[in-house]
Image (tube, rainbow, N blue to C red; front, side):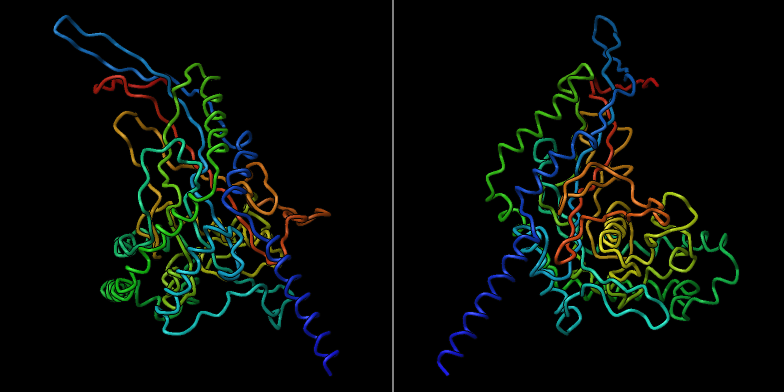
Length: 428
């Protein structure tokens, strides 16, 4: 009996070690995020001189015109992760800590434990395509520390959600151009929000009040992310990234000409468990958008025809997609459309331009593109390639044991450095 018990104990110990090894290899850390950002930077920065800005300087002795170079480039503002649950978050030291808090918030919001989001669920009866469920978050990339205008403690909130009813006229204009028969598929509750704005306002206000009680917990996300991430000794790699940026600027003729990033390092812009009411469709406000009902509209696609990826709307944690990397890419795209836009029906913090006065701005946090951070660092790409007739699918060879993936979201900045307070014009 003792021998059998000892064997069982050894077997369980070996099994636990194997599980721990597999899952440890299915994650990255802050150093890994910085390393992957460095690896992808050459194909993603896209630094170029776009023109010249003209300024007027006047003194008691007369006026002169001064110039500065107008440049455009990308910055890796936000790290977007998709994952099954907080225990196997692919960004272990930062995302894992944030997700643990998010899980607690989601449990309290819904007054019930959040089951793991799941990996790939059972196939629907009428199709072989499984439904994928995922959590997601968006956290400021630590490398922006080398090129931003100050770091704040950013956490999700209800400010943008409260402004969502103001977008109803724009949503209705979009419905006016959609096929008239489409509205017949929309649930009566959603139609009620469209036809009675006061009902929509009451729904949003009620959700905001419920979330308001969770703000102390939500507020603890950013300090956790910041303190956890900053413990890593990644200063050398940050300096490498700074050197790379300076080299790109020097190639344009001015080694001091870079547009500051507007992102806050380790700021939490989105966390799906804190957004449980909407990410899990308990309050399905995303169903107000035409894109949630019209096939082929607002798809993650480069062709506008056959799509093998998925739709942007509704922006929730469920998707019909059997390839885990494609599913992750679609979720990353969904998250980007939330955090880059005002007044969205979600609990989040908007990534917006900070507009320091020492620059004249032509673009900020614009034209997002993505590079993979984990499991395999890659250059920037545009999601939605039609690979329906290809022997290999996008993402083949980039799956992970836990189907957790991490992406960098790069956004474009275009600016010139202000020479005087009087900006005349820019060429072109």
